[in-house]
Length: 270
Image 1 (tube, rainbow, N blue to C red):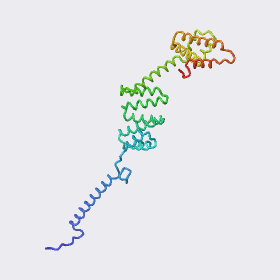
Image 2 (cartoon, rainbow, N blue to C red):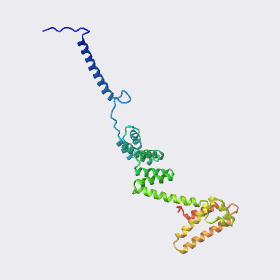
Image 3 (cartoon, one colour):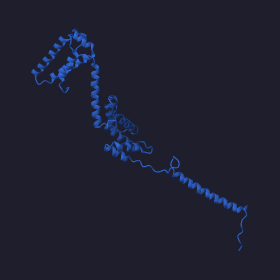
Image 4 (cartoon, rainbow, N blue to C red):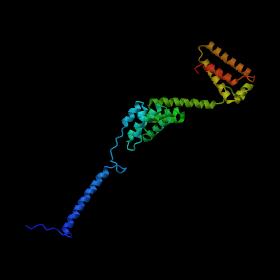
């Protein structure tokens, strides 16, 4: 049996073995780098962990009306880019409702609007945002949202009631605008100085029309004919006093008409 002979530096067999060892080492290093890269986050160097977005904490805090807990809990969900769309919508709606209960109207509208951008099929959220627009005094936007809710769900009871009420309100406003600045009588036939003064002043004209309408209502609601005649007699006396007092020093016709209207409407304004 032959003794092993040390291979010379230039031996092709030794070179081949060293090359194979280098290949194995390089492959091992590449695998190591690959696994390391998969385990690191996009920020570089930080281990990537699977982010668990806890929407339950947000929903629970909002349901409990706990602003202190809901604020950070919901923000953690809403501001996280990894939050799934359904959870994001839930968090926005929950926080929006909470903000609305605490009269943070603009922030609540912003959350509801973002939720509706993500999911425009939420009838409840359209109705809720409509009620918020109403609180801000934006009746056209409120009606639009109530209508949108009804398109999604024609049987949505709250949206139906809100839309019906707003339709009546807009109708009333339209009727008021149509007669704004017009008294109860035709100014074209005005002959008395007091009547001409009322026609020339929109505020006095509105008061005259309101007094006339209020008087007609109380007479219509009178218990019997005798009471109705008595009420009309009181109105006729007021007109006589108004006409006689107009133009005299110290007579305030606007104040007199306001007092008459208050008397007709009663202490509760009706």
